[in-house]
Length: 292
Image (tube, rainbow, N blue to C red):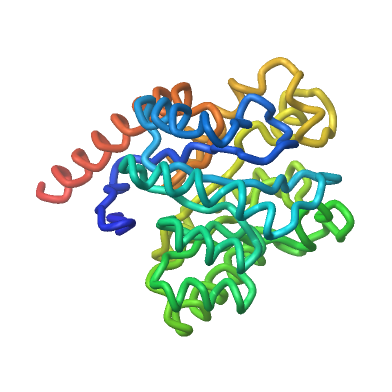
């Protein structure tokens, strides 16, 4: 798949692109991803050198119990960072679920709106009016409160896939130039639900939209490692979180994800090189065999 973003063509045909997380929030559960505004360009450059194709800037933590940040404060944090990063040639996405913040970010130069709520009408209007691609995610409930909703599904993969297919079509009909889709790992999911969504990524990719996943250092990975059911901020000190993040993202890439959003850019990017080499050879072998 070729992805058009910020006047560039990103090739995700046999490779999975890396989106590096740059937090200007104050209470992200992954504390080493938090940077001061003035240090953001240096950190973004490090991530690009390590293999990040896109830098995802956010100022509001989604973790349960996180402090609420007003739109004005969110804008004050993200706008100068985005301006600096864009001036240095980075492709930038804005991680927000608030329309005024999305508009301010696009005005500052952001190339993608990354809205984990599935994008309300006001946020979609920003994408349409500014001609900005938008990423939408499946979530039950609201950010910071997703644990309060029912986690039972008749068929989690089917519900997520149908919702994203329908929501992307609605947003395209409204006039947005491109819609990315995100199955929403962790948000209102049990451990088996997250695994079922991972295994369903080939079907999600067949919908024809760029598939973005965000599973970096999330609590369900700690549960997979045998540490029990933990919230993301409690999981960070458990052994193996980096290794679990790498493994999950490599599997997701192999299953069809086009972009993975991660904190540990260098480590994940190196691991994806192995997956990419195997995918490229597999594609070449299929092409040769089809000619026999």
